[in-house]
Every structure is written in structure tokens, then in C-alpha cells.
Length: 195
Image 1 (cartoon, rainbow, N blue to C red):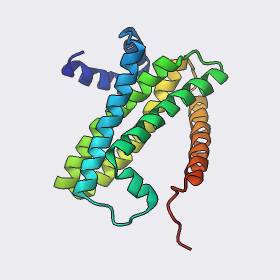
Image 2 (image 1 turned 135 degrees about the horizontal axis):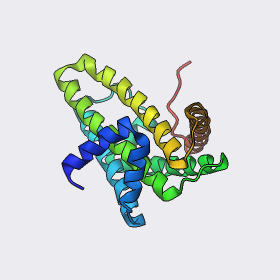
Image 3 (image 1 turned 180 degrees about the vertical axis):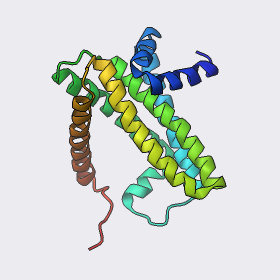
Image 4 (image 1 turned 45 degrees about the vertical axis):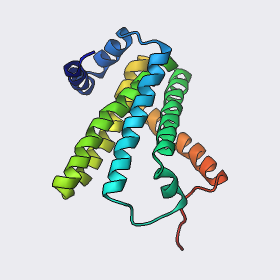
């Protein structure tokens, strides 16, 4: 796939997610290639986050911030989060009668992350040139990630109701957040809360 075709795929993903899912399935990636795409997305995202931290160091320091300041650790956490997301999308979707497979979910989660990496790069440039617009770009990226996750999950599983998928997404987010909070508390990496 050429660079220009990636741009076309981004536009197709935003306009017609169902066709984008079909096209990504038709590429027929092997399992090793799917893992490599997810790893690439995690590494690129962590690289940009590391550059942003160097350019704009955080004011506060806590255990979580210290962990996230190590690029390899951040890449590992992002990769694990993508795999967990792909598992959640597959398991929760199939529990409600969906037909999606983990292999396809992994590619779609990685694809969403790669799109967000593009926005992350734009945000980094905006932080330098027009700092106030960087916050707006963060909101755009957040909204886009939710939209793409819901739209691609719906297409992956062959669901017809967007509100039901959105409800499942919200429930899944709470479930994953609860699990991660318990793990973070067990390892003592939750940020300290002042009274």
C-alpha cells in the first residue's frame, strides 16, 4: 500500500467505515503482520509523546508520570492497551451476537491508533506554532477516537444499531477502566490525590 493510498483509506474510514473495514479485511494480513502494525502504532505514538514531553515537560511529578516518561515503557503500555481493546471489542461484540474476529479487531484498533498518531503529529506542530489550538486538537482527537471505535466496531461485527454499539462501548470503557484501576492500585502507580 502506497502513502497516497493510506490518505485515501483515512478519508474512506471517516466517511464510510463499513467500506474501510471491508478493504482492510481484503488486504488479508497475516497474524504476524497484524501484530507488527499494532506495534508500529504503539511505537509511533510513544515517540511523539516522548518528543512532546521533552518540548513541554510536565509540571507535576508522580509515580504514573515517571513511568510514562520512559518511552519503552509507554510503548509497552500502549501496545498492551491496544491488545486489551481488541480483546474487549471482540469478546463484548460477540457476547451481543457480533461476528467479528480478534485478528480483524487488532488491525482496526491499530488503524484507529495510526490515524490518531497523524493527529498527534499535527497537534505537536500546533503546540509550537499556535499553542491555543493544540487544546482544540486534543478534543477533536478524543471525539474522533470515540467515533471511529464505535463505527468500526459496528462494521466489524455487522451490527445495525449505532446507539446500541455506543452503549456497549461506554460499558466496555467502564469495565476496562475498572480493571486497569485495580491493577494500577495493586502496583501502587495511581497518582496521589491531595485532600
